[in-house]
Image 1 (cartoon, helix red, strand yellow):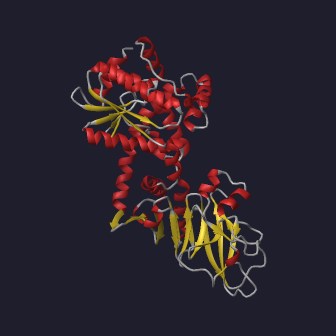
Image 2 (tube, rainbow, N blue to C red; image 1 turned 180 degrees about the horizontal axis):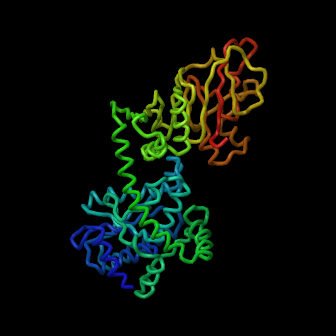
Length: 446
């Protein structure tokens, strides 16, 4: 196959640009991006090269940077580079390393394209990346949209190699003696994509030799099907939705009940609500129950007389959730909290997921948040002795992900419960307690 002709044909077919389009090519130094760069050079496009040094592989990252710089000097291509402290950024923004690197590079690409007046930004994603992306989307529960995979063009991002297989890129690199850098991290199977690529897909293709080609055919079909379904769902949303200031309201009584879950999921998916939460919303709608609130990272949903109310909240931008006195059930991405008042203290305290507080001491609104550096509380059973939350986590032998997802329930800026783990001594029920607040934590899937 003539890869250069295929490349030009794909660019033309999907309207990704022409020789007059100023194209910023994202080049890591790996095989895919180096072949992409050479194809642009041979096609005679007006290009510049953008390279990110994430400082994730010590001196190897610096050698990648110098390699791409030298290559651009040889071909007289404008070269732009930047460096990131990716690990620090990931920690400060509560992101995984790969998610942090993705956010950093695309933010910089857009800024660079604006300042240097490039029309589009080209990346080296190819057909095998497409297969991996769709399979990962299926695993993450991304719905119909996830089956579409990556588009040849999204905004100013273009993917000219999306119709080309990895082995074809490798053959072209060998035949044309295109040098490139090997990224050792591609063999690290702690990353989901690498594990899928290096472990799972080889086993599947060994049993089903045509699997990857069938997947590409399916993706092509799913992309067209998704466009049709998206149009239908959008019609349903348009019929039932209205906006009231910052509040979006979906009147589910205007939607066929059999479509509630599909329409709700596709409407709320961009706001990072998951299907499990949607199912709980459907049950609340069917039961006519109010007082339930569902949270994603930056949005909240409540149910009110057959309507679903969506709103962004300032507190959620700080990863804090405000809980009012009237709130009975609060949903978050990894579970839910149920609140109720008791006229007398309980006799037993044997369930770690249920906490009882002296309601006279509790001050509303309560705040549900993640832990901050320096947080401390007085663990129940330690007679009022103060302990750092960080130390408590160590004693509980919690891993990093457990720490990051651990909720703290706070009253008047004081931690009253490390949710599901330990009550604070100050808020305990005593013999003089006349009114009790019961809070039940139900982790997702429990």
